[in-house]
Length: 424
Image (cartoon, rainbow, N blue to C red; front, side, top):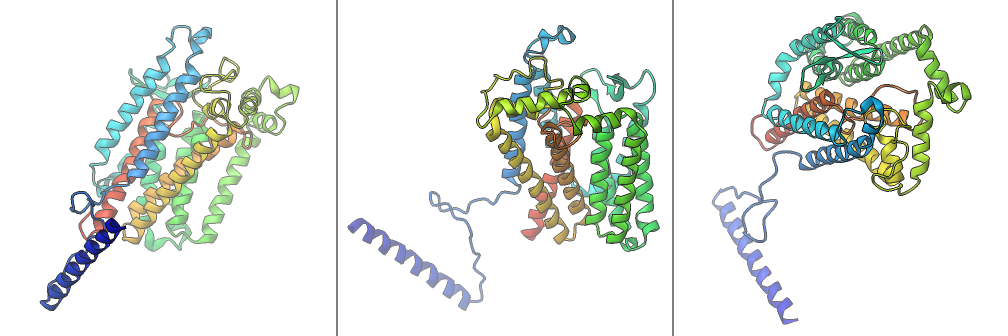
């Protein structure tokens, strides 16, 4: 009791001394700085972080969990004659390399001011278009399973559609800043952007890569809407885009078969054909139940579930880590998307429109692509060739995801500098 009384007396003495110093300073016209955080050990002010540490940890956690699950999903692949020349650690080592390259690229990117990206956004978009054309050139682009989507670079295969996602976010944000005064006129504000999006769509559908086009269209339309395009114009554009997707499905036999297989995956006609991946994905989730079969204990990854380490990684997570593991992944992507939108709103409030729209565009990219991948794995959406951002195996996707998020982190850093009275 005496110790408590002594502590209270000491605390009261310090408060009275602080009050008297502030009163004396105020009487002399001297402003006394207010310290919001004070370290109890050293008595020195705690340094306010200049970046979002939680965002960094969430991204690193998703990368780490993805690497672990890629290893688990691919360790048995060498037993398949198709992958007989690969070692059990092949995909783990390569994905580790991709993550290190992505983190290095992100570290370099975060040091580049946002206004540099704003100035060069149209050039980056043109470069992405050129690469989308180059990948279609025979003997230049690499074809796998009838799709020509990759450019071989020796150490990795580069997928131009991943750069196109980053480029469209930059270009659309830059475009809305330049055309802000014309946003009420459809032909002046939307038509040029629609032409650019249509050109990208033609190139992607020639690969074919309809999944990437869906994500790119969502990013572009989302930024147009957030940028203030008239509501009627926006919904008209969405209706035209949906109509185009319906026509593509109607006049494409294999896409139409995918829709029928999605609607009735257990039909004998589809279970061993177009719905094979979906049925085995659902079996994997069913085996996982609440807590999963245990890390490394998936049976579906043993040559039953195709692309287990890429498109259907979430199914392996569901089988090995159960509902709890899947729920954690879903919550992490929800938090990540929400945080990216929050950073974007902060930037817009600070009159940094390009930065704000870009950050929100990346939020649409991460959240939208994760939503589609999860929907496909869970049977809520038709099968598409889209990976789970930050987690699925893939070099260009991992590196460009890190670069895109590093630019958002740079936006957050500059936001914090402005809010502290500094310069971006």
